[in-house]
Length: 181
Image (cartoon, rainbow, N blue to C red):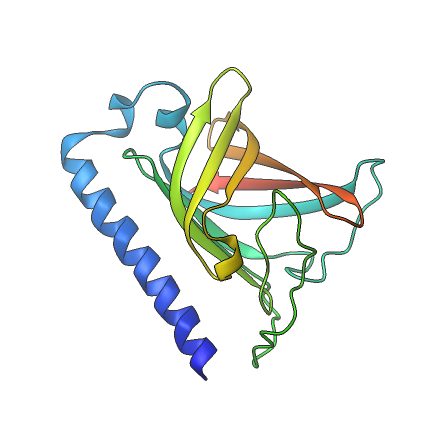
């Protein structure tokens, strides 16, 4: 029960912080007033697909988030971000002793079919990467991590590619998002 309360509190806190920041920034900076890739990233994005493959192209079944997770990713014009991903058929009870994904240098831990974190972000225009600087996360071990993601935007579609290097295998996770209007 304590962990459900913690999950609800994390979600409410990240939603409240981003909502307040977006309202504050909306009055002083419009999306078109932000230059470069940051201006293109600003907004709320809904996950439409997540594909996990090994480096050789072999598909991988993701035990943590499943084959069709749901989620939102939010970037604001002030440099803040939050992401929440959920396995739709996740268990009703929370098992905090296990993680659904292997620990790696570029992937946060999934807890009982749920992944969530928030913080700030920076963009490397030359390399087409966005780095998420974690200030809060579902798993305390993820605090302070910097997660690098390649990205590409085409119209209202955002593609993020995450390269992991867990001790067992290197994976390429491709997440496709659509802008929420």
